[in-house]
Amino acid sequence: MNTKNWKVILILSTSPLFIVLAMVVSVLYGVKDIGIVTIWQAITHFDANNVDHNIIMTSRLPRVIAALLVGAALAVSGALMQGVTRNYLASPSIMGVNDGSAFVITLAMVFYPGLSNVHMILLSMVGSAIGAGLVFGFGSLVKNGLSPVRLAIIGTVIGTFLSSIASAVAMFFQVSQNVSVWYSSKIHTVNPDMLILSIPFIIVGLLLAVSISKSVMVASLGDETAISLGQRTKWVKIISILSVVCLTGTAVALVGKIAFVGLIIPHITRFIVGIDYRFIIPCSAVIGAVFLAFCDVLSRYINFPFETPIGVVTAFIGIPFFLYLIRVKGGEQRG
Image: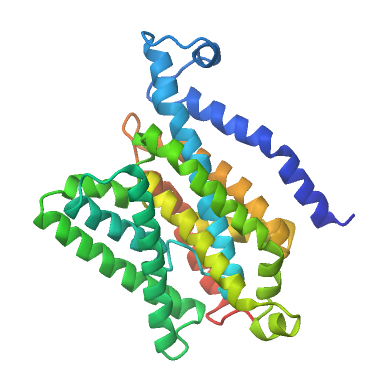
């Protein structure tokens, strides 16, 4: 067995340990530190009159579960996008997917404020598809528009445009404060009911990604090679889009926009396990989940005792990484 396979086995076999560690650390530390015994008591013998028990069960536990799910969802979305498009800068935050979701959610909150959680998730998915469609549509109309750097620029411009329209609409209808949480992430105030509803959607998205992981590996070699190997590239792209829309749309509906997870994690995973997407996708899910959970813990201490949006932490890490990729890899699409 080669080194890469051993690394895959190590990551997947130790993933429960790191996930549990992330959950314990997240529940233990914050504005109010809570003892490990109290956590165990809250889980096994919940007391509604105990303040610490309520903090654990209604705030910190849902928060870390949301961080784990969203981290996995965004990381896998980024891996799929990078594999299918052969674009090393592809990610939900750069290619307009997050912005499209937040844009449609803003319109829904303004014009249909009484929408249920499930409708909010479905509309967020529609927004994801709209955002990605606009970016890749404009990219296909511009000369060399699908090259990594130019597509990233187009994605940034369209994302800013959508955000600006959403902000203007929110200000006009005086709901700016309610809408702002979708653009700065609201993982610290995650809705437990929305969290429970989001789990099946994220699981479906992850299963779709895993089911086409072998095909994404072939697609990453280029359309001509994939077709010569007998792959139905159209269906691979359709299923990939469905998975990305499902994962990203649900993530944004649950906690708002969080940038750069889908950019950073697939590259780190590819460096560790190699270029086989049968390994990249599940390992990205694990690494992305743990990464975002620890970013959430770190966000509590940047401006202690006040909360810092988790997107600030991921941006601190992601922007230098983004610039590094442009400098090292240049602007050409991977062949």
